[in-house]
Length: 419
Image (tube, rainbow, N blue to C red; front, side, top):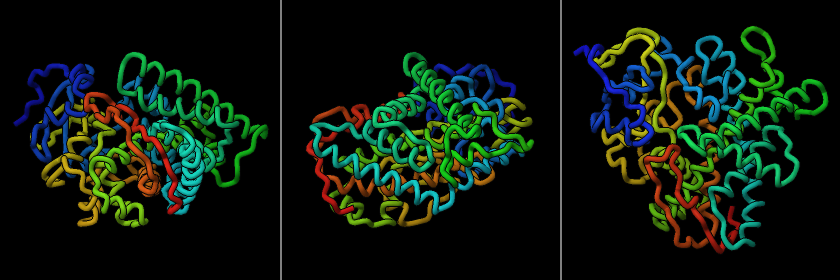
């Protein structure tokens, strides 16, 4: 049935109001479902399922250039970011990120963040109350900047950058104060990082050999030209900002440990069971809400499962719905890390950071970093002794990005020293 000419009501307000439940509501319980709607004045094709992921990431069908709204670029990704490119330009720019996928580089980042966590945990033990979301953001900022070769001048500079990086993520999908805080934070940090790039290139500052900072300062576009300082700043932030966004997953991990894991399963993390830590990390990313959906523009007139949209229409991939699809997961609303020990992770099944091939496509190149860090921090978190005071642990699916409302506060922190 070709319904490309049927009238559609614009659902932009529903997207804001319903959050993570918006696209699952349109698709219902249909695994591999498809629907049409209208968003931001454009007809939109909504898809879900592993086959739809391959359809969505095929550059013959969907392009990213021009697809991301200006408010998202001004907060989360930055204008001229790799996320806005397609084809040869995208592949050339992505070469900057590919070395970050190397297991040795990931191990180096994990080492820096672990050291920052261990230092911070000793201080937490002297404090009465610690909000893990906020504390993790500072730990991750310190660790990733040390690893990336970005020197920060003292604790206050680390805390200020952490606040700005969190604000960029927290305000990308909303209007009002959160959004304007995100815009101001990105503008401020893009200016600071652009000056750092200019100083390195002019010899006024040094970038450690082999560091991310050195790489971004030296990277050339497909034209052979050095990245403009602003674009270099954007891409440097697009390494550091997603790493600090793991604060969301740290709070989710604490939430899972408190509400969903038995002491015996927690002990597997505490005892350094690496396969279980990997399974736990995957399940946190699957179970908890982070990215609600991803969008692109139709390269040509498209039809998916007999539902058609014209060239230039939006194509929306239902990330949250797919990660909670009963046909894929069996018991999607049960937190069960063991599912990832029972069968390998399907590339186009689990898509909290996108699908497709990370080396050539638009799947987040930092996904390996996220998994490695979440594995390590989950084990360290399980190894901490603490009490959980009364607080609001709700997670609203109408807020994007969703957060544990209290940030997950803990008291009487004690470092056991097992890690």
